[in-house]
Image 1 (tube, rainbow, N blue to C red):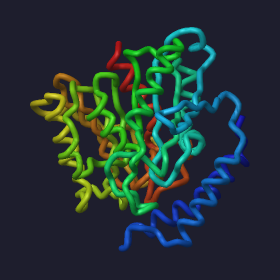
Image 2 (cartoon, rainbow, N blue to C red):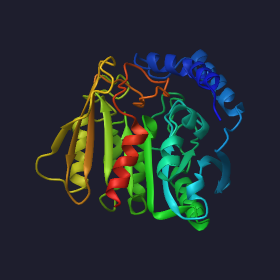
Image 3 (tube, one colour):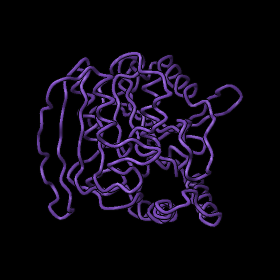
Image 4 (cartoon, rainbow, N blue to C red):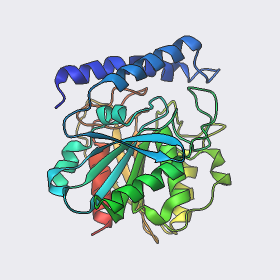
Length: 324
């Protein structure tokens, strides 16, 4: 069980990553050798941490490469095929354990009865986007990795094949989009936070079917700017893409989310389009780059953060509603 000191130490562990994120806003995008060394040192610290109680580290082979993921199976899910939510870390991390410590789905999973998987990428994810940490493009077989995880958990009776969900933030959010383009037939729903579509999406295959998707973007995000960059599409273009994929037409249904923390300087506005599958969009007004967490777990990213919503709670509510 994690203690307050563990959470505090996590913020220290991620400090250099946050500094790098701030540096990456200025040209050149690739961090300095000194910053890369600091990030690598912090990654090693995370790798050396004990696996928390209730979380298990597992490995499997993808070709000749050993891949790693961490899994939490609530007591109520043991012995039966259950919904599974995958939580993908961003580009600065390389460990599913880091993702668990940053954005903990466990309380929601234990309460509502679903399995959580935190996969570990290899220097981020192979989504075709140039990696800010290495300056290169990832070539690992991540699609094969996810297929292997799906197959293994289904064969073991852990996963309900019809209720597998993918969530991710930043580079992990881009990978979530990529997985939808390659594996829509195996994904029941997707959730993305602080990640717009990359321009390279134009070279990806179109998803084989519409999939319910919830996207949360911040208007003050310096890493994934609202209006887009040379390599990333704008928030509007991202939403229009998924509306077209999901066959959404007509006007959206809008609602204001409660201002649960008037002191955070942010507001959350929700829009939902209906179609062959829904597109749900949260405009996080004033929010920067990072997971919205009411209890303040995410210490990384840049800019202000809304405390009006918690991403794991919102993603699970969306997935559960769409599968009733």
